[in-house]
Image (cartoon, chains in turn green, cyan):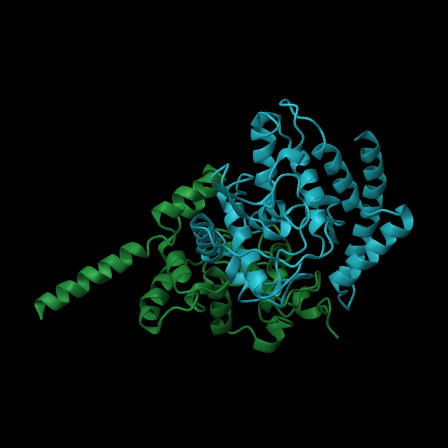
Length: 191
Length: 268
């Protein structure tokens, strides 16, 4: 029994070790032909990225609880505790290709025609209200989408340091505030 | 060269006009089909100038192809995959393994290799724009050709595998991989751009003139543009990274029976 447990432990350690990076050393050696800066991205791949790569973005059920827990633990909140910030600032971030770039995948922006890779967010706040639960869910999905949708294509804006907690709160306001352009103006492309 | 530059200025102005038009239509209620828009622009170029920008690049590439290098040889002495001097259909079988360089090469890296080994240029003397033009010239001999990329040699199989692994690797601050968009969301739209998978023929339109950018893009340029848009530093040209990804994509497109577009293609 003890032996079996030890073997299991060794195997899981091995699996964990392998999961640190998706590309193995001989492959990484060849990736270096693309130059230092390029190769570095693959050498320093994160273990959660490796897991998603290995499982082709569909994690097996037995890995899910631990994965979700780890992703949840990465979420931080704004200093002032407010999950809804300034919707005008949020709009500028939402609609900026170089910042959050939300409209590339989501429909609903009154400024740009949205893509259809992600679900439509048209009149997001009007349809859901502004309850604490809705605010928290919206904030957390933007902060770390993998805590709700493991391995999804959506960037982990907070967890990867692409946006600050305050900037994310501004986007939450842009989506939820009934006064926000997002909820008062028609989405580009709406019928 | 000089006359080309002048012609490009005129074309550039026209492209600017097209861009303004494009910005206007992205604000419209009904999104315009980007492919239809490209074909409309193409027709406009043809009617105004009687020639497409891509053809100017191919023309320039032809001059460079027949230019003598320091060794006194032209690129006619280079084997691009079907023997010395044969250009017909070679682009459709690349990347492949070459015995002389002992390397799997795509057309761009093959041009880069031969400019050194056959023509005697030093790497520092080889301009990227020249390689692009020559690539466009040679690719034009495979216009609308059936893609026939099928890895067989062990080095080709290793390159294909590297390409497939790179395709699935999620990396960088945006957690991106090629697959997470091009496989999972094939057929959808990112902004106005349709997302295609290799099985849907992804990669079959390069080299192409992109009127929005007023620039010619080869396959390697296009791969770099992808990396740029997902915030991963661009790999250096003629690297195994480009060759592996190209081999993977075109082999998958070949399995699905796809052909190249009119080359050089005209697109947004």
